Image (cartoon, rainbow, N blue to C red; front, side, top):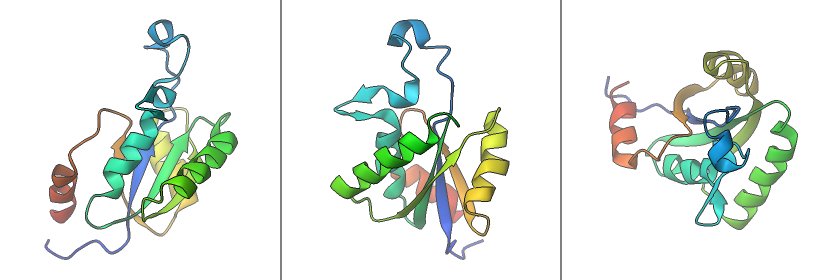
Length: 133
């Protein structure tokens, strides 16, 4: 289809438990590890906010961290407005639960493209993927 998605939101999945990196990171979950002064999830947000057509970001954090992380995300947006709307949701037990249930509860009427907390994807690749839907 070549019609643009008018209400596309990216999902930043940052609800992992960090068990694989626990020993190497001193127990800090991967999404909270700092790179160039900010946590990895914020680098993902920067990348995804530049994708053409993305109107907002849903940050998904572990339930026990969601409230505190909402405050941190708010502070990040105050110091560096990415030009998109945002929301914070609690992650589910499994990744698919975080996407289908928790994020749907947070923004039930939007079309969502998900983006995991992995090394940032180039904006052009994400834009190409979105333009095919």
